[in-house]
Amino acid sequence: MAAERMRVLFLCTGNSCRSQMAEGFARALRGDRVEAFSAGTNPHGLNPLAVRAMAEVGIDISKHLSRRPEDIGVAFDVVVTVCDSAHESCPVFPGARVVHVGFDDPPRLARGAASDDEAMQHYRRVRDEIRAFVETIPDSLVAPTSDNCCGCTPGCCEEIGGSDNRASALSLMTPTVVEQDAVRGQVREGYARIAATGSWSSFSGSSFSGSSLTESAGSCCAGGGCCGPATFTPEQLAQAIGYSAGELEVVPEGSNMGLSCGNPTAIAALRPGETVLDLGAGGGFDCFIAGSKVGATGRVIGVDMTPAMISKARANIAGYSVQTGLSNVEFRLGEIEHLPVADNTVDAVISNCVINLSPSKKHVWQEIARVLKPGGRVAVSDLALLRPLPDAVRADLEALVGCVAGAVLVEEMRALAEAAGLVEVRLQSKSEYIDAMTSWEDPLYQRIVAALPNGSRVSEFVTSLDVTAVKP
Image (cartoon, rainbow, N blue to C red):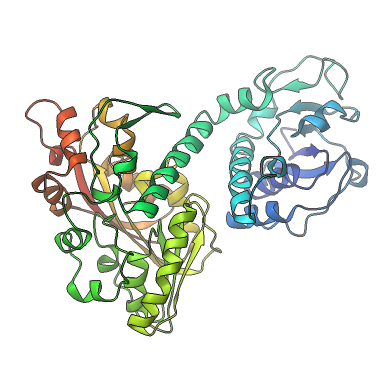
């Protein structure tokens, strides 16, 4: 196995979803060291939502075959059972080592979903767990095992990480998957309330601890900044951070909810005819400004993971078209770690105070690089840290959804962009946003001040950062 590619079979009952995704990832990510196959004990065709989930990350499994192990006709070095049913009824594979890493069944999880879009969140979560496991192959599959461990004889088939199969395996290989999903859920809930009420007050007085939302004592204030305005209007904030009167004239009423910390469309140098992608589009504010810049021959795609925000943004399209005469903006439901956009199709990616919110920023930057055309560029306005925040601030859910607790250090932002393969990474720290929040005595920022060491200013810890980069 050391001299040649390891032959790995991913086995599931139906060979329609989990095993197919595992094969797809293994071929794409570990093809130099692994020859991957998938099969089922009772195959029944590809699952179209699994095909869609994989396409979102640039892997096409639509032409994979759903089949039984005997249909493949090769001897396997390792068999990985990825569902409990296949594990329990695993055929004998003479000479092969059999291990079990069970993953949740997306169709079962999505059984009560009202739409395919709602169901996709379950497929994406399982897809990402499978990817995390595949990224450890082949090292995770070559650990020493007992001499008699071959086939699926009773007591012999191994479970990576112990008896609590998936949870134990993932606790070793991807210890933050569950926490990441919890953070996304809390952020999605917070922004759904913003979409519905235009205010953060309904979610005030909560704190984020681990993966649970717990009530805490606190005044009922409507937080500000990129979690929603309180002591200022969205227009005041937009003007303070550099939006021109002309830019604000083209956006329909209700699309500007005061969720910005910069003006990425200004640093993107957008040109007519370009395709632009906005990460975390919210009500469509920056999308509509970008649409007016790229004109009738251009196109703007806004992606947001909150259905209520997508509904709000789509409802705003009519007003935008009336004001501009353009119909060049669309909105898609999706997570910025798994963009529903094809490879090499975008001229410019913009984002406004959103990457902070991601629990997996590395994947966001990788996705940005994937969807950009060669020579395409990034223009991001976000919050970053000049110094690490105190634990009390990082634990505050309102600060998290306010784009503060999730911020990374400035140089870490640079490192993430460069690690994704982007070049010409430039960072510009700007004080306007923090100054505005402080001078307006925004409630959220007052809470942050209270949690800082005596005599400290928010601007000593947090900055508004413009990030530009290019895909070579």
